[in-house]
Length: 178
Image (cartoon, rainbow, N blue to C red; front, side, top):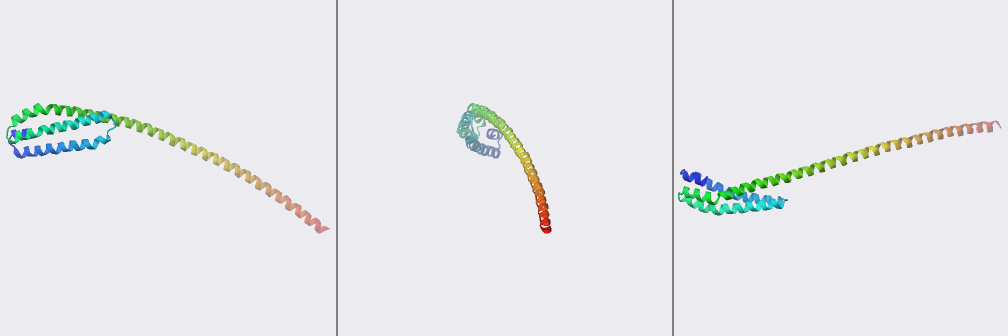
């Protein structure tokens, strides 16, 4: 942009392009610093190091381009940019695409691992629910069995109490007659 606007004699836009380049170079370096601790593959860290080197090489050429543009020699600046920065630009583009592919590969691997873990958790949850339901059924049958036994015992005790009461009544009437 800076070379193009210098060539078209638009100094304000050339200055804006100059600021944009410096701002974006800093943003790229900052982004690389942020993502580097998050990278899990050694290959990703290698690619990130190459990207960092590319930014450093590109910004090292920038003062020469800036000087040529400020002196009004946009043609020479374009030649220097083509000779010195085009290969850096291509390598950085390739590395950025490679880093993107590596990141997508890690994300897909993580997604699959999460899916397996999710399925395992779901299976365990269903198994525990089935065990809880079985315990509930067993508890219900045990409670019914105990309740039935207690009811029979209470019924027999009632019958026995009636027999004892009847016998006591007969003894009382017999002792009354005597």
